Image (cartoon, rainbow, N blue to C red; front, side, top):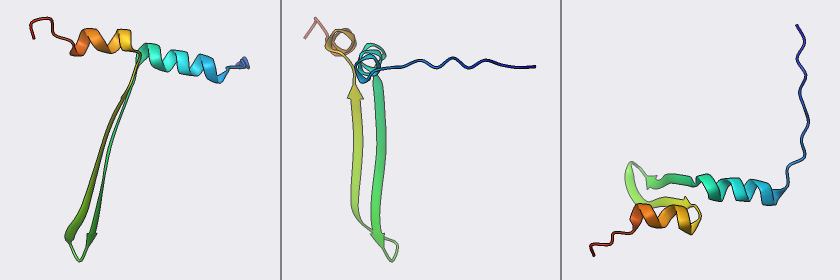
Length: 63
């Protein structure tokens, strides 16, 4: 059985357009500790999406 893989050139603009259309959420954390004592906690929550996709979710007309 053989399969054919089609090569497609994709530009950075097309990738960015797709990401903004669908949206991306990145979440992570880093804890720096010494001798089991937590010294620094870094939390990251990043939402990347276009404004027309985010506003209906977070905007409330009642406020």
